[in-house]
Image 1 (cartoon, helix red, strand yellow):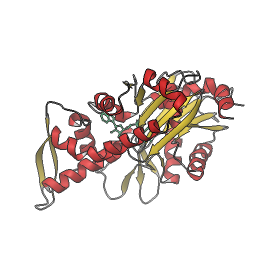
Image 2 (image 1 turned 180 degrees about the vertical axis):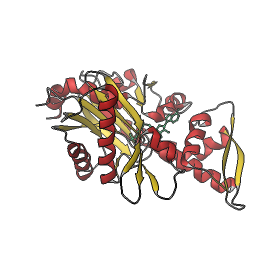
Image 3 (image 1 turned 90 degrees about the vertical axis):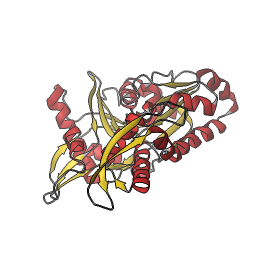
Image 4 (image 1 turned 90 degrees about the horizontal axis):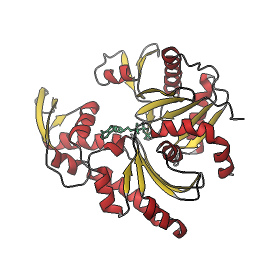
Length: 335
Ligand SMILES: Nc1ncnc2c1ncn2[C@@H]1O[C@H](COP(=O)(O)OP(=O)(O)OP(=O)(O)O)[C@@H](O)[C@H]1O
């Protein structure tokens, strides 16, 4: 039934990626939509819409329709998907008519949330939709030998969720999904700056701070960044200088929540698989893997080797794409 499946979709909280069987990753843009508030019409999607966040006039709203890895605004998600598939069709000349689709969902998502994902794709006109567990896709995309009799641990740190899974024989042996990811790290930075400087910064500024001077909980030479926000007392624009040590403290809590999920998954690992984990280590995927010091921090905390995947932001999309070819094997394993 899935032999002729054609595209894989990583419908992420932060980014939406589309993988075509014939051309690889053909689309990789932020999961953002700019909508005309009066007519409800979509004005822009992806990069163009992200540029507009926090800057639009009253009649235009920039929306991120996914939250914590799942659909928060169904209507807008369907519109976004449809616009993005049309864009791909035009841009790379890949036909997106009635595709067979493999799309991923977080392991912690409910059946209602999964149905919403499936229906959003079907609404576009997809013929068959198959849902794959997000960490399994991440593991396949990271090049781990998921269908072999050796267990692998994958940690996928996305925008809205972090998934930790032990995978063996093409299936998820045990998994934990926490609704904590890059977005929560950004929110912690916004809160810190507001509390300590009385300055309000926007989401995009917080993300820049994280990417430029954010560190996992490791020793490092401090670096600084200058950013602008609005002084909450004077109401005027203000420039402040932040250093990486204070930001490190500000983001401690979400990082520790992610670590807890990793530790508890490892603690619940069937004893027969523990040996493999010591040998193989942990592979980290998702945008969060790019936080500076991530690999050193996790290695110190869990005492097994930690590898950052080669292309962490694209692993899930590549994995859904590759699973187009492996689908029969995976289906057998999940029976
Ligand atoms: N260099 C970097 N340093 C730190 N964080 C980064 C970096 N690059 C990207 N990120 C963060 O990675 C997150 C996006 O990752 P990714 O695209 O894997 O998430 P997603 O798949 O959209 O989300 P989810 O899996 O939760 O639905 C964002 O929070 C982004 O800020």
